[in-house]
Image (cartoon, rainbow, N blue to C red):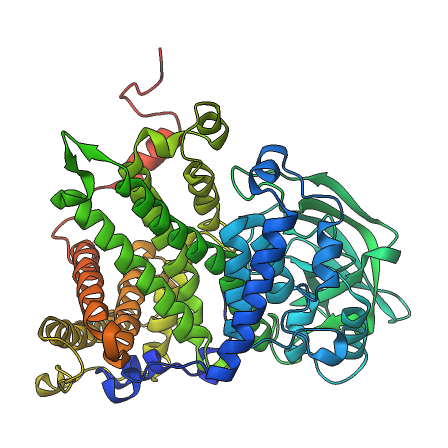
Length: 571
């Protein structure tokens, strides 16, 4: 589901946004890292162990990747164990897991096989059951609950042939003459579970009295004349994930099975907020699984490698690679915990919105870095390694899987742009302060942090204020939001800076909260991550304050029009 628009941000809260709105870092709030209740953690531990054992005995990930097919009866076996009802309450046959425990189970499955994890993530995150909190009491909610208890498989079709980022889907919903149902017409592409779902949500545009509205329509595919899976789709990664192109030729949906916002022209805001969690489930959890695997593979590789009799792990460049990967995984895990532990989606708007990109783009950095570390051995396929008796590390498969995660659930650069819009809209709406006195730039010292991390905390406070001032100056100079938003790269850079700042917040907060024997190493890891984050942020600041800009439009237009005088064609 396209969760690019999380709804009206004014109806939601976020601890990071509270600091942004205040114009200064509110460390007294942000410094309290969310904790998982020990009993809740124990429940998750048990399910995670069961899932790991079940997959190891049931599914060969290399065979799935090689053939693009899941084992016969695999989805039915997931259903039998309640794994397609991770969040559903026990009375419906579900496991009743918390949001973060569900994430952990999905990550565990993805660590063995990414498509297996994504199946759990799609069902738990964007299936019809995940949308229940947005459904009013009545027929639709009761219908979906019955279908959960019966063991339905679900997904959500949001991408039309025209693309995903249009304000109004090209699929249409037309009310029948007697007003009892809607007729759906159009096609959906890249629909996870589309080939196996028996209860499928889809987005469509409804036009009534000249007014266009976007609705979610829930189709029982077991009895839906006009519904057809026109093609199964295969990808560079995530091979074996059920995915397809779907045709709707006047598919009838009872009026009661539609979810519409009575006041707006888009889906109800809570649907977008719930979809943010779903996106973290089916892209973020597999991304973290891949990154953790890369850490393990790096250690195994370095344990058996030497150059001219010197252990490879003793070289400075290699140590920096390993330390940076450790810090990246620590940051990803911190963001996942922060976003999903304890608070609901309405209390984690910004955090959940950017978590997908934090997890998937960081995983891509990790897997790309690990590929360089392992060199040809990383690029080599598992089958090739097996033929020569080499160590069977599936980095090549992880590389392909990780790249796809940056595209799934909307492309990374578009999400960065939307994150920037979200912040700028708060200035346009008068929610964010225009400036902060210079004396309030630096937050109070936190004695729980090391000296280096104290400096990172100060820099975090100063940079957050600078970002707020930049947003204020931009919105004041350009009263028309659409005009400002048309400067997409400026908005995108703002979103990337804010995303990095939130991640540093989560990392420093976790390091400050860590006690005992892990405290020292957590401080060191936080130092590594924060240092790397400032390097990335410096690049984005230079983009925002460049003294001149190349004429990208001229170069692009001339090439696309075929009028470029320079010959770039192959011979």
